[in-house]
Length: 342
Ligand code: F6P
Image (tube, rainbow, N blue to C red):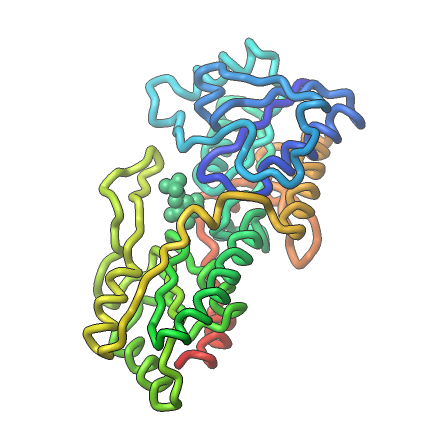
């Protein structure tokens, strides 16, 4: 068979490990021909391909980014986009496409089924907000990086008697903030799922002061917003899937915290450090397992599905049950984290 692979949306550590697994399994076990599709759906729209063989995947397991590139191109926003994709796929002789992506990229894969494109999805996003799977690959790495950042900020915050606000990614959900905050012993964790009350945040900081703890660490997801308020937007630019660029809630918080507590407050925006670089061992394994499962699904004919991990078991879920939804954080876990606030 001739199988295409594409990665779309924001990159996540582990994309290259998925590609490696697909090529290795496809070429060795099935005698497949594997065609890399450049820059997400844009590559299928423009017919921009890159053949992949065993030589090309050597050394890919620990490498961050995506050797195929990625983009937020939405073919459904282009006149005749889906038809163009089908023409290019047919001309290239592609029988099926393995789509590595989050909600936006997989939504396109699901819609393309109506045009006859056979897709298998692989769940990717550092945000871990895809429904149907316990974990997307990339999340574990992002949490590890954010946790290490907290550990490092801890000592300097303590030395200077400062509040430090760490802003992490998480546009609509607070999985990274919650997990890193728990692992790094944050004094307050703010997530998009629960609008925050600034007076309450300041009260936690004062409570610590009364116990002689003159420093505090706050973790905030970029999509967190004050009660009755809106997310803080970094730029008005809207991508082809309708998302605005968030960022800056850390600065808003710092100003408010200084105003109400009088304590010097600094901000660290972790940004793309969470996405770049080598995946953790967990993500390398998860990405590898997903890659092998995805190409096995192609050969079993399980299309319009996403490979997934449910309760530690590898499974497949229909894309119709995944796309257009959002997995929010487990509020029970948030309650546990809040035991350590203040
Ligand atoms: O796709 C996940 C994500 O990491 C979000 O948490 C974040 O808002 C967004 O990507 C930022 O993407 P970019 O850097 O590509 O604008």
